[in-house]
Length: 211
Image (tube, rainbow, N blue to C red; front, side):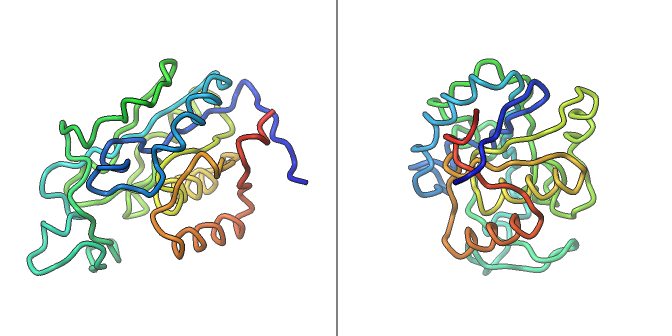
């Protein structure tokens, strides 16, 4: 039996990248993405503190395959900070694709953190950009607010949720991932994410285990 996770006043729910481009019909749609939104809406009401994240890329972002002549989507190239997956153009600032999905309803969210707006660095994690050195400021915000444990939901489990969870753990926060409130891009990367989280001792639970 999975242990129950009791919610506390100093918990924060981090809802990752529930944006049109990552949902059905978007340029980088995650399979089944829309299915998790009602679940997130329901249990988000139980948290005093909620933060939303939003990919917010400028046109011509380094991570776009269209920015590299002769390259295709989902190829990996080497950039100044190491390997970089190339994606379809997505979540471009000010476009409908970058907007939060209209079915997401978390009116008491306290912060919307935008990431990936530096043209030269991608940003999966809500805590650090992909150079693994440039902070977004989220850790400092949480410390100032005295929020000690972060629970994650959203898109995609195998990329932005995974790396946000790992970086939160690295920064000394308690971390829990709510798996049935996430969806993954692909099975192999989902399996890799599970393995990585397990190695770090980060619990992966179901929403029904929240008490």
